[in-house]
Structure formats: structure tokens, C-alpha cells
Length: 75
Image 1 (cartoon, helix red, strand yellow):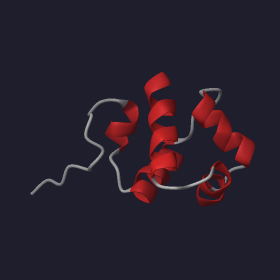
Image 2 (image 1 turned 135 degrees about the horizontal axis):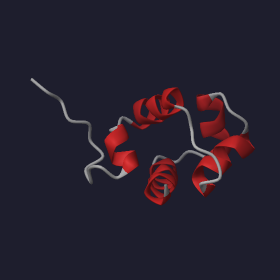
Image 3 (image 1 turned 180 degrees about the vertical axis):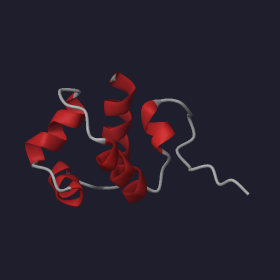
């Protein structure tokens, strides 16, 4: 899923994280994280939740469903 890997890399860089740091946050190897950004592997749902929580963004944004990274808060 090309948009996922592009947005994953973009939010990481915009937030000032290195791949090594994200790997530690997600409890995966650095190469494993790099594979997510390369589109060679897909993260688990739990990992996607951690990414969204780390960057305070919506998983829908990562998937390309919405274009606004800010999570939608329902009343």
C-alpha cells in the first residue's frame, strides 16, 4: 500500500524521529521498521495503533482514507 508507506515516512520525518527511534517505540527491529516504509512488510494492527498514538494522528490518514491527519473526535 503505497500511500501508507509514504505517509508513515512523512510523519516520522516531520516529527523528527529516526527509523531507529521508531523501531524502539514500536518494539521492532530497525530493518523491520524500514521494511514498513519500503512497503516490503505490513505492520500489525497493534503496530498501526502505536504509530497513530505516537504521532497523535488518525490511522485513517495513514491508510489514505482521509487527508487530514488530525483524529476526528466524536461528541
